[in-house]
Length: 208
Figure 1 (cartoon, rainbow, N blue to C red):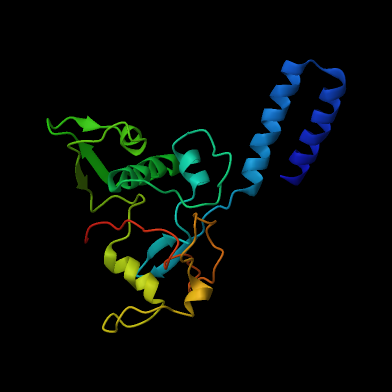
Figure 2 (cartoon, rainbow, N blue to C red):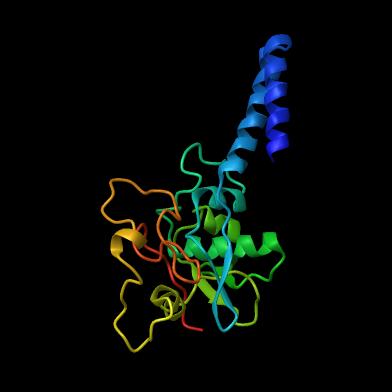
């Protein structure tokens, strides 16, 4: 990536000196795309036990845009995506599964029984009367159940104990901020998962 950026920078410098404004605009757009990719944080998969894996951060705005083939955000690449319904979250899981070669977990239908495409639901083009069916056999991405989320948030604590922070609140969670901050700015669990406490609300799935 570093070599690509250097090459793009040299190309822009040459274009500014020798090319028309339309050609220069195209090269600038290419450079901006490279810079966006270079600064976006990619999620890592963490095993929380029993072979269940979870991303180490909430889904970022940059990842949301990439998976759904939307224009990348001009600001907030590494901020968590917000204002997303439960239906959009499950549809996003399906689109990501298809992109990565896995079998989608969720099936969406409307009140008449017509199957809805994942992308339409994830992009908010369908709002009412959505019914969701979940496959128990698919190997694609899905929302964690509340029990799985709690297991990760406990960081090894017993399920019989009251759910508590795994460290000082100021070190592990983002609270009382005027705007959403980037993911992974606080101390993770011992398994390496960030932002289970604070920052944003997170959707969970149904009990499996």
